[in-house]
Image (cartoon, rainbow, N blue to C red; front, side, top):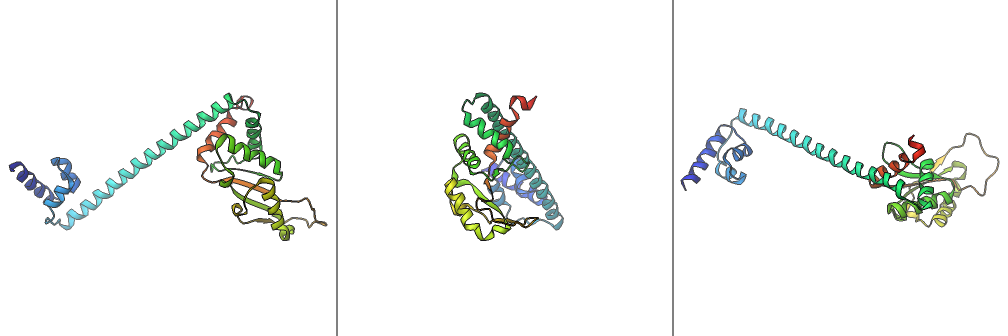
Length: 226
């Protein structure tokens, strides 16, 4: 009981000196709830309040830096693991589809620093092979794609029929299409091409799980890295 009384008295004394709950907790080795309960009637002066506010800001800043540091470390570890796997893919894969898909992505896919994953083409065969490649080697299902159609503005009236063409060719859903991009031609065409179906972009949202892996496979193609 004496020890309990001494801790309570010491808590009140330290609180009156302007210490925070956390500082008292660390100094006396007791719970924060005990300190708060014992010292709830203690009122800090204006100077003490200002000092505690500054201290809280410093503590919060340190915690934020620690969180950012841990997050950066985790990101590096994930990236390193994916790059390692991508290097292993290029060394261990024997399936021609893997190399065909990788080659198509190397030529037609996104390789920018935004870490987006997607591919753009006018040929449904290329896009179909790419989608099969994404699914077989990276677990991406057709329903995950965000799809955007770009067509010459002269074909605006054919937008729906062109979308139907791509839906049939790639077995995708109309709901996956974002707003169509209409491109103005520099020179007006003198005729309508009945085989024209625009350019299609298939994009994978939240692609971090495969971005570094794919680019690592490309970077580890032997003749490319020499």
